Each structure stands twice: as C-alpha cells, then as structure tokens.
Image 1 (cartoon, rainbow, N blue to C red):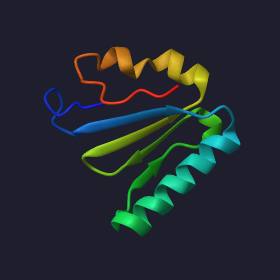
Image 2: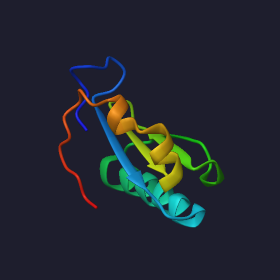
Image 3: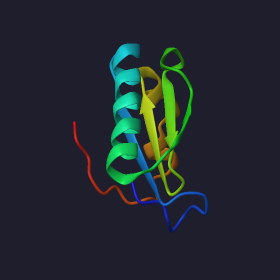
Image 4: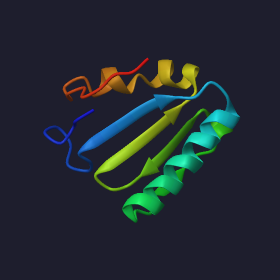
Length: 90
C-alpha cells in the first residue's frame, strides 16, 4: 500500500496474514533474512507471534504480519483507505 502522500513516517505498508504463530514467525524470519542478504537492510522487529501482530520496520517500508483475527480487528486497510493499494494477493 502506497501511503507516501498521507504519511510522513513511511512510504509503504506491506500487510499480510499468517494462519498460525509458527507461520508468522517463519514469515518474519525469512523476510528479515532476505532483506539483510539481498538488500543489506536491517529492520527492527516488534511484537511476537502469540500477540497476532508482528511488525518489521525498514524506515520507508513497514511490514505488518497479522493473524487473521488481529487483521480483522485492526483493519489497517480501512484505516489507511486513502492510500493506494499497489497489489492484492489472496
């Protein structure tokens, strides 16, 4: 989601869901590793899988990893609806 016109703290949100604590941790681990290996980026990880919301902060890009119920509860897509959805996969 492109939010650069409506936010001064980030340019993009990546929002995705994992169906289990193990999947959320695996997504966070793999994203962190790939960003470090391929782009030499070191992000900051916030949250734990058991909370249902993990966040990887790379400055201009923030990746949100949700459990399905936490994603439904927080509805970031609605909250940031003025942002432009660049790609939606389901």
